[in-house]
Image 1 (cartoon, rainbow, N blue to C red):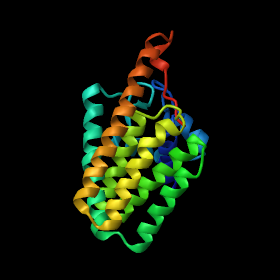
Image 2 (image 1 turned 90 degrees about the horizontal axis):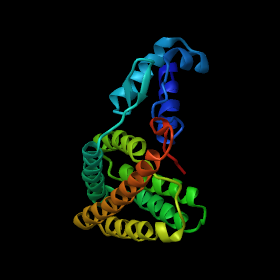
Image 3 (image 1 turned 45 degrees about the horizontal axis):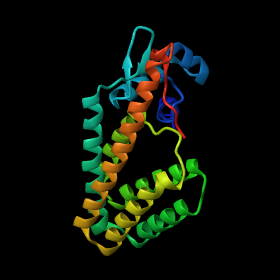
Image 4 (image 1 turned 60 degrees about the vertical axis):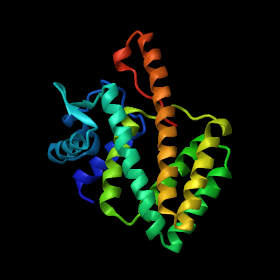
Length: 226
């Protein structure tokens, strides 16, 4: 992995896990010194993140891209279409290894009581579903869209079984449809699951925005991640 890719992957991980707060500048010179590389790979990495729709160029460097309500809903709509298409394809193309991996992740998500671990396993479940589609174009597009979702409307610190209950059931329905080779049912179940995730995140986003309005320095308020 070259210097540009190393910086890109590290910054992407930070952006999607709430490391930077809204308004925090990502300054090439400072990042160059932090990563101990020249400014060229840093600028290239920042340009790629801007291309991914995560950053915008500002006076002091780059900042997290802020999106209006319509843009956020458009992202969710696009993700739902792509995710349901992946589930449809997985129902017709998943290998026995794909199915075993999905089953294992679903079981593991129910075997832990740690909310952060549940969220991590859920992410792996969706990654495994996308891989089971065996469509690189869908997987690549979903990776970019998912990063935009995490930056624009991240999960707040997750709760317990009551919050995750619907997701367990929805994952089980998706998995059952894929195992049965029922592509239409897999697509429908995934659309239902995507709508539930969208509604939950939007509700959390609204609450967070309301809290930011009461914060003295609301422009610097960031997002909480598990």
